[in-house]
Length: 108
Image (cartoon, rainbow, N blue to C red; front, side, top):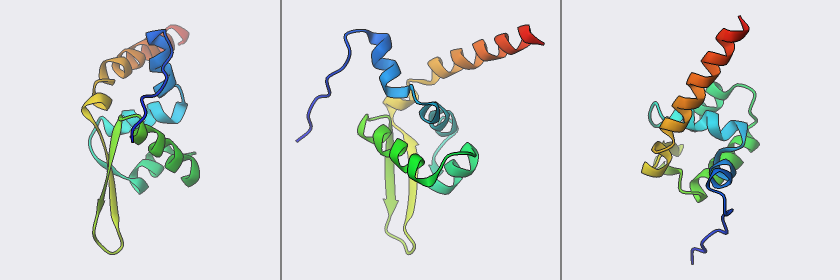
């Protein structure tokens, strides 16, 4: 039984509740390039622990932002991909990237 989560009244707060963690934004950034395995994500993210990455991926899967696919192999192969909903965050990340580049160029 899927319960509908209680979301904030403010749409900006709703968005932030889904991607406000630093790691979630970086996971989305990496998955916008395509499907990745757990080890690829961990290497790309650098300072993230296995426990934190697992927790973030589970939260994002529960939120409907990504899908976890397990292949029946030995050892099991697990891949993560953004859902259509997760892909719809691309313009937000593009805007954040453009703003960050602009900010950095003003400081130089």
